[in-house]
Image (cartoon, rainbow, N blue to C red; front, side):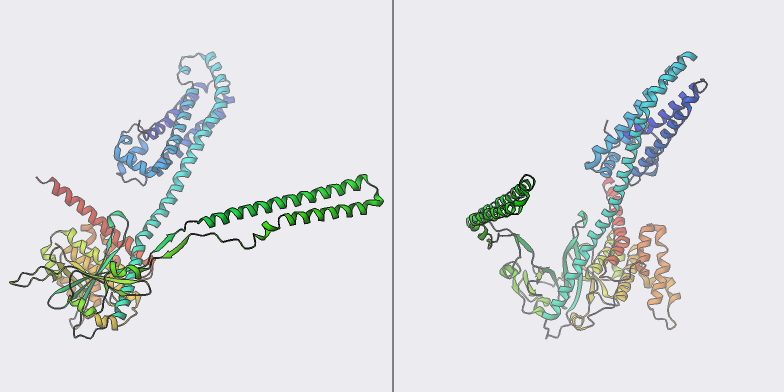
Length: 616
């Protein structure tokens, strides 16, 4: 027996006990002494029925979160003879539901209920009643009343207690699960906030350190990426700046190096150990001194009390004065004896405590992070020896580390570009795999959430600011948020209107997701012409109306989760106020957009992988 099937046994035991009690009632109800036992037996049947309902509800609560078919859940709740309890996948989910820490305890509760039901069944004369005459039934009824009446209450109390314990456990577990879910959501949101702080540091550092005097606009695209997505341990990986200097693209990987606290504990010296021993001795001497003083005071008080009882009342004052003089003399002697110990306590040597210090980046930055960058213009053009690693100072101990990979291999006969800007139309035409296309949309969502409210994301971000750039070594392009002139970006508006930026960015994401799903561009839709302005120029209102109408087609083909994610992006339909720097808003976007996209891609990749493996 693997353990979980005991739940099915208990589930079947309650009806058996209930039917046995009903049968016994029908056999005894015609006896003249039955009326003395009727009320008690009716209460017993009622309690059994009530506890059966409680156990069934507990089973429903236990099975509710399991990822199984509804038909399987119904069978487990209603069929005590089902073999589903033996299924390894169901047992694995149940063990995960209960957790190994509480599994043994939970099984003990079920075994206690099962044992109590078995003992109650043994008390009922289910087999004897059919083979006894009326006189035998009378004697059996009296035996049942006395033995059953005393033992059933204890057994029923056991069943009730175990049912209540199971319910309390499942109820607390549900609260813990909700708290864990909120914690997990918070743990997935924190990396985006951390990335936004890094993006701000990068922007402010480049803005202050980049002194450009050349004629180039330094056209630039930026993207961000996470690491550890498959393991639920998200953290910012790096930011990538891609400069288009005409002749070639220059890809700079940018990271923020910050000081990390290092906990150090100094080892106690021999002198410190001696000081500690002396301190312990002083404390012990003070304790002994206090004990002696208390004892002397008590003796003096006792002597005074005795003299007041047996002595001459006329000499009472002299006796008390004599005792007080003796007490003061004794205390003075004790102080003299311990003066050395007490004086040593005035200035004890402090103990060494564990300290926390910060690693000094300045000591190692020249080795780990290369040399300090003198000219960002040369680096943006790639006019440095590759591979290259350098840094800019972003604060007292913070460094912005920039890395430039090895130079691309060039054919001496003709020049080969290492990156290529790809139009959305050509990418849609050349990529029939829907999961690959949708991955591009997910990358754009993550980039926007990681850049936040920094000027890296334009306040009026449109699809014109989103470029698909393909590394020739990869199969799919990567979305970048482009800046026609990074110099103008640094000189431009430094504070964006957060609500407008969030709405514009999410609308762009929603439209791009529609285009990636259906392999069509918004401008190519015939229905869009009816929303154009009077002069025939497309504007935001026309695009919005077209996107809303287009989104209604998503649910029928791709399901309600993806349809709802796109609807929320197009309309910015989130409960918190739109603000890409607000943790509540980021959590809402992550829960309602990122997670549905990840689930859709996971399901699609699983199906595609299964089909690919099934082909000969």
